[in-house]
Image (cartoon, rainbow, N blue to C red; front, side, top):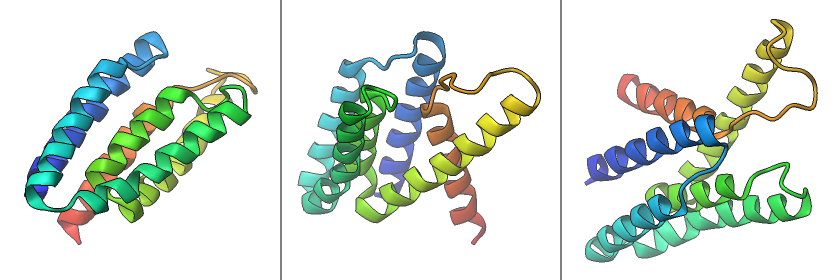
Length: 142
């Protein structure tokens, strides 16, 4: 059954990455569709509490978006809420950590080559997609 979660999350992150790059926003209906899908699958499999615990990471990001006046976007928090439904708490936490590391390295690289300046924002979801892809490669290899 893990393949259903991996494929669903990969599709979600791919579409959300494209939207984040092009429009700096993520379609909430797309997120709602995925949330409904994964909730139904988790209910059928009897794994609902695992997914519910993963939502807390997204809730923390929504709080960070509110406190920082959207330096962290609300869409990022919503995406991590749905990722949490797919992954559970610890895998979602690991995804957030890896995403932050990749975003920091990507931002540093872009500043060094002069593509962005200090204080500019970067779309975060593409880094989440990259972190998820790296995790899948590490899982397949290891």
